Image (tube, rainbow, N blue to C red; front, side):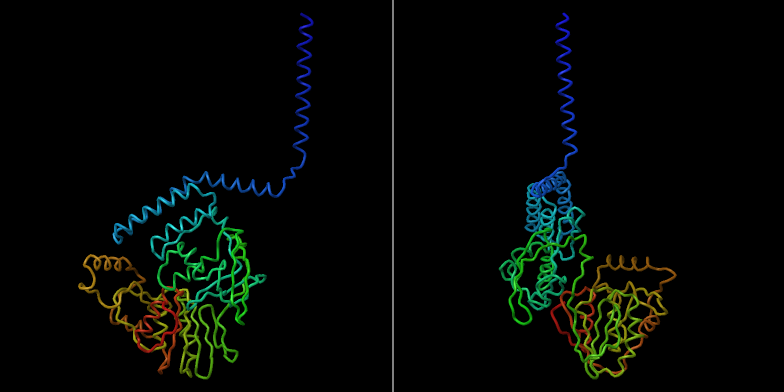
Length: 431
């Protein structure tokens, strides 16, 4: 019995010794630095990302389903074939989402799906996880009259400013865009879809590369393998050298602000750049600071090609200052602002039962009446006269307006009003 007890004690003692040695070994391992190779780190990081993405698949499919459901607003305008196509696009996007392993690729599938709506106003705002996988090129591109150009670049990027982008991945630029990018862009109107496509080329998956071939101003052909190296999160902190409208060296700048640039190009010929119609005080600024400088002017070139849009009435009022026209007859409400009455919530001409459905007319009148307050008054012939009492040029001058397809929507109204006056020449691509 004693021998058996000794044997048990011996076994327990040996077991405890082995366990103690094992624990000491583990402590030494924990204190030892982990010297993983970079390849292992990259692989581990990639697997972690894929694993994290896989946990969000159900949420991603829910998002695709919400996009699919939102299209019911379009159904009254669609044929049965279009509705079936939309269902097929949705099913394909869901199947793709089950196979993908990155947030960026999922974002691309959403773009393809939404582009099928053919609605140029629809936009997908990527969440932070998607943004983390988006990279941008060190270039900015633009589209002018059938050609693509570099209009901005970082200081250390290779391709020269103003160069024409003639090939992407050794394919003619327009062919590459139609093959790879157009399917991601919801805009389908002429010219505009190419502008949107070249802008979409500016970003892709962070770290990916693309080969760009350009033709410089002096005719040289240069190629570069450009990298989508700028993280979206830091893009606004990167300094770009931008192309801009270059006025002749002989020109003389008369006035410059965030909204306007006025320069004398030659004797009696002026250049007027208007960058936005969003500035609520721009009409007063124009009347006070620019009109007095136009006394000797015989011709004005108005450049709204880079105008980002805004309030259409601002552009209309500026044209009326230049043309000396009276304001069109209005119905609606006006507001006193800066000692002047500004027309708001208006429609041109009286409501006409023949042109406007009765229910729509009633809704419009109810909506206008809801705006009634101490700050508003209904437009009458007397208030309409006050609306048109603004400084204007007393003589006839020649007006030329430079327009572009890429300007804001208020520029469309500006160009249309200028054209309808019969006194303005429009030059440029269609708005």
